Image (cartoon, rainbow, N blue to C red):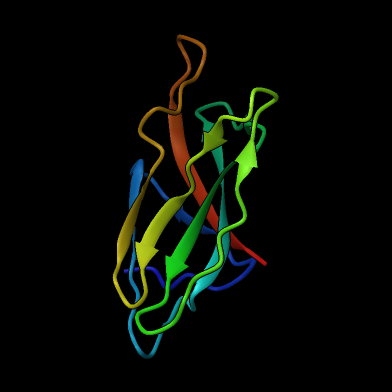
Length: 110
């Protein structure tokens, strides 16, 4: 299993990758951002896509700063529990036919 470290891309030929979290490889409470770039069979790279998530602390409050649209509607953040592994999915990534995506590059950002 890949070990995510800040600014170290994890490449895969699969669209789904598990983020393994353990005492030896923690993801501390608070906000985190992951980036995805996909590469097609001709070597073309996509623009990056991002997902923001919050790791919820087990024994302390977790501050969450919300983003709202012009109408005041909040965009719910993704939340995972401290010490629990989770999965990132790039399964909805697409390429213009007849191209095919051959690599997924997942990166934990600072």
